[in-house]
View 1 (tube, protein in one colour):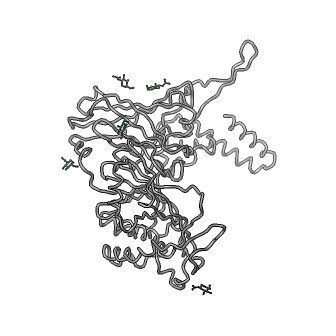
View 2: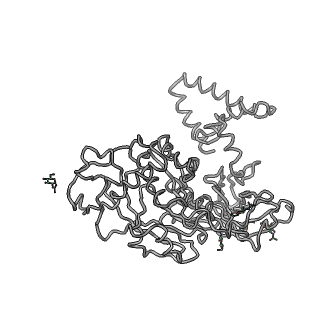
Length: 502
Ligand SMILES: *[C@@H]1O[C@H](CO)[C@@H](O)[C@H](O)[C@H]1NC(C)=O
Ligand SMILES: *[C@@H]1O[C@H](CO)[C@@H](O)[C@H](O)[C@H]1NC(C)=O
Ligand SMILES: *[C@@H]1O[C@H](CO)[C@@H](O)[C@H](O)[C@H]1NC(C)=O
Ligand SMILES: *[C@@H]1O[C@H](CO)[C@@H](O)[C@H](O)[C@H]1NC(C)=O
Ligand SMILES: *[C@@H]1O[C@H](CO)[C@@H](O)[C@H](O)[C@H]1NC(C)=O
C-alpha cells in the first residue's frame, strides 16, 4: 500500500515536467479504472481482467510479471495457502483514547515455501523418509513441527498416526532453503495387508514466521497401490554391491573428463555396480553422448533435476540430492559411495575394491582420504601429445604440503543410515572409521572438470618441484592404470567415444 502511494507521488512529479507523459498516464489511469470496473463483470472476462489488473498492482509482484504464461498458471495453483490476514475490512491504524496511535502490520504472500518435496521412500515395513527443502529462517528461528499419517485405501476413516522427527543434514549451509529429512516411524507396520494407501505429511509452522498462527500444510507424499508393496525388499540381499550417488552436476563440464571418470570407475567397481548421476544443468549434449553407452549397458541412471534451481539452497541443492539418492536406493546396494566426478577412488594393487570393503564390513561408514593433484603441470615427455593423454594419465604431480586439513569423502552401508551429507553422514546406526589410510584413497583433480580446455599449462621433467609455495612430487600411480582403463572402455563400448573432446 505504502509503495503504491509512493509511486503515485513519483508520478505527480513527472506530471510537472512532461505534458505528453501526462496524456499517456491519464490514458493508463483510465485503463486501470476500466480494469477495476471490469473485475465485477462475469467470469468469461477473467483472463483479460487479470492482465489489466497488473497495472494497479506493484510492478515486481509475481502475479503481474508473468500473468499470461502457462507457467504462472501452474505456479499459482500450487502456491501455499493464502496468508492469514482477513480479506474483508482490513484493519487500519487506530487512535486509542489515551492518544496513542496503534499501527497495524499487514502480511502479504509468502517468501519461502513451507515444504518442497523431492521424494518419499519406505525405510521398512513401518517407517518412511521424506526428503525435501523447507524455509531456512523458519527452521533456524522457529520450531516448525511435522506429523505423519497413513490413510489405508479401503478404510480412509481409520488413519494411523506416526511420530515424526526431522533431520537437517546440510550443516547450516542452506540459503533461502535448508534441507530437511523427515523420518516417520509408525507404531506397527502400515499397509501390511498390501491393500494400498497413502502417506500424508503434516507440516506445521507452529508460530514460526507469524507467532499468531499455526499453519499446517497437508502434503500427500507417497501412494501405494494395491499389491504394490514388496516387504521382502527390506530383508533380501541388494541387487548391487556398490552404488555411486553423484551430487548435482552443474556448469560447462568437459565431456572427455566425464568419459575418463566413467570408464575408470566402472572398471574399478565392476559388474555389480551402478552410478546415479544428477543433472542440475551440467549434462549438456556432448556430456550426454559419453553417458549414453553406459546407460545402454545399464551402468548409469541419469536424473534430470534442473528444476531444483528454482529453489535457492546450498550449491545446487546437493545435500537434498544426496539424501534423495540415499533413501531412493537404500535397499539396492550393499555400499553407497559419495564423491565428485573430479575425484578418482583408488585401492592399492594387491587389493580389490571387494577385499577392501569386506575388511570394513563391521563399519556402517568409512571416510576416504584425499590425494590432491596438480591440475596444470604435465610431463615434458608428453610434449606435443598431451591432448591425446587422459587427464589422470598426464596430471602426475601430487600436492604434498603438510599440515592442511583436507576434505574427505565417504561410503556407507545405506540400510544403517537415516540421512547423509557431502563429506560424511552424521546420522548412522553403527560405527564410523576414518582409519582407512593405505587401504583406499582418492585422487582429486580439482578444477579440471568444469573447463573445456587442455589442462596441461606447463611441462616438467622433475621428480619434485615447488609451485606457488606448494611442494609437489611426481606420482605416476594413476598414469600407469590408464592403458588398462582405455582397453576396458574399448572392450565394453567399442570405439564410439574415441572422438570425444575436452
Ligand atoms: C527412521 O528412524 C528410525 C528410528 O531411528 C530408524 O529405525 C529408521 O530406519 C528410520 N527410517 C528411515 C527411512 O531413515
Ligand atoms: C492423528 O492426527 C490427526 C492430525 O493431527 C489428529 O487430528 C488425530 O486426532 C490424531 N489421531 C490420534 C488417534 O491420535
Ligand atoms: C501446530 O499444529 C500441529 C498440528 O496440529 C501440532 O502438532 C503442533 O503441536 C502445533 N504447534 C503449536 C506450537 O501449537
Ligand atoms: C519381491 O522382491 C523380491 C526381492 O527383491 C523378489 O525376489 C520378488 O520377486 C518380489 N515379489 C514380487 C511379487 O514382486
Ligand atoms: C630436464 O629439462 C631440462 C630443460 O628444461 C634439461 O636441461 C634437463 O637435461 C632435463 N633433465 C632430464 C633428466 O631429462
